Amino acid sequence: MISGVIIHIENELPIMVDLEEMPGPRDVLVRCTNVRTVDGKRPQFVHEKGSTFFFPMSIVRLIEAPATSASTALALQDESDEPEDALALEALDDAEEDLLTRIRQI
Image 1: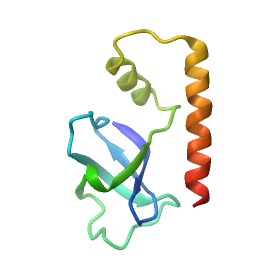
Image 2 (image 1 turned 90 degrees about the horizontal axis):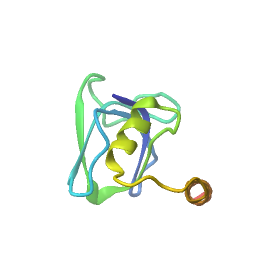
Image 3 (image 1 turned 120 degrees about the vertical axis):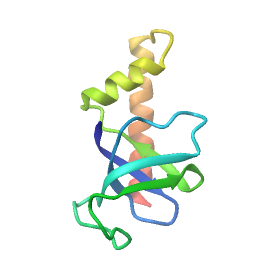
Image 4 (image 1 turned 90 degrees about the vertical axis):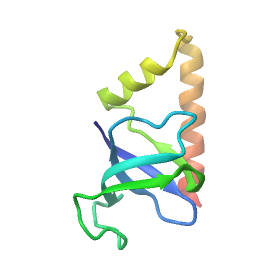
């Protein structure tokens, strides 16, 4: 279980969810549980807290998974076939942080 994942949906405020696994490149839906706003409140479209939600990838702009989650690290490690250079990882982290900062300012 990957907790605290933030999903940015087109024309909506971001929501925080829990995922069983990260969606793959060919997935058309994201399966989520424990859907809440970033500040922890229940969104208007959630009627029952324990429901499972499926969001089409066509409306998902960005999926932001916490780097501190051990599950996330293992999931990302399993997906990569080749080891990456540490400097390349640092540059990628910096670029992702800049992108997230710009997205949050919109």
